[in-house]
Amino acid sequence: MILAVLDMGVPPPLWILAPFILLLGGIAIGPLLAPKIWHDRYHIFAVGLASVVVVYYLIGRRQADPLIHALQEFISFMALIGSLYVVTGGIRLGVSGEATPSRNVAFLALGSILANFLGTTGAAMLLIRPWIRMNKYRVTGFHIVFFIFIVANVGGCLTPIGDPPLFLGYLHGIPFFWTLTHLWPDWLIVTGLLLTAFYIFDFLNFRRAPEPVRQKETAQETFRIHGLRNSWFVTIILGAVLLRGAGAPWGLPEIIMAGAAWFSHRLTDPVIRQQNDFSFEPLKEVAWLFLGIFATLVPIIHSLTAHSKSFLHPTDLQLYLLTGSLSAVLDNAPTYLTFLTLALTLHEPQLHLLDPADVALFANQCPKTLAAISLGAVFFGAVTYIGNGPNLLVKSIADSSKIKMPTFFGYILKYSIPILIPILFLAGWILSR
Image 1: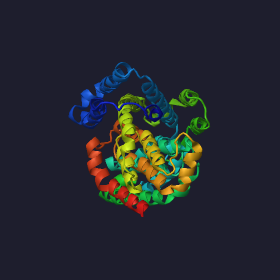
Image 2: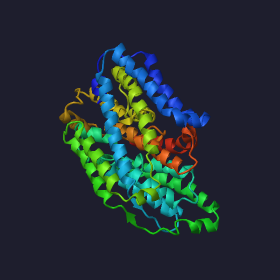
Image 3: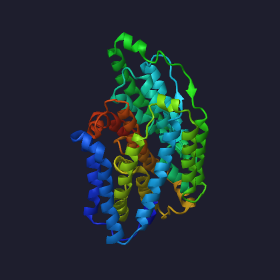
């Protein structure tokens, strides 16, 4: 992990943090101010900013290790995201019946459960296309936003498979069933409140739709699963994720994931992918942008780690909000590890992240503190498009389906601030009580 490489040494200067800020700004306002230029040049913008960080660490500090580890993490990230995208693109779930608000709520609730078995990425990639199809005659941006909230983020907090930060905790010694045992009340409360909010939005949207449109929805669809053989490839990918947890050398799980994707693409009937409107363009956009994000994150995590010892003893609520606020704009996996390291350091006696026995002891002795860090990392990943890997991929799929999506700031101002954040603050208050 980058964190393991950057936990010592002189902090980086403030100016090297600028590429990450500029990249966030580009993602936020580029599609809004110059959509055509952004669509044609976003990869140049991302690589250019990443190059600044690469030059600084290679020439300015003569430290290649953090860049190598960042590249490894990016490859691992894209191996998981990309393989699940390709494999689930070969599975077509037929949906039948009218997409009423109640049916939509049931669909999202099912997605929040599946996220704990397939991971938020796997569940999102499997369900986003049928979700769009079943609502295709009245789908709006809020349908996709709530899908991101529930399926791509909040839903996956019950198992280590659900979200990358929890998987990292499992790798470092947190028992497999700890998340299910300690986080289910918060999962139930936040998921329930989000589903309730969605029902209100969807009920109003459904009532505004003309009767012929409502009857037309999915009328020609039948509930069938096409490309079911790809479920075996999904199982292989999840097995590769667990193989990493069993201590497999870096590269082996990634090769297995890539192999599963290649065989899936070769063996799947092209008609299924055509019916899913499958293309590599959304994956290409995510790959270029996250290449820039992973590179420009190196000095951010470096600086955060270098100054973590200067923090006072934060309360559980403060840890929840600190972890969450950074997870909304940074990669939530290293943010989770940073604050877990801080909590272990502040523990009396001091514990160590590299000792699984110490981490397991911390999980047993300080469950509320660990819950605060875990929930902050998972829940707040939904606050922005870049808070969690699947978010931007879901948005790209929606864009390719010609759905009018909110802008980067529109997503935050219209949905995150008035709906999601109050619910997450309520969850934090309950946790602190």
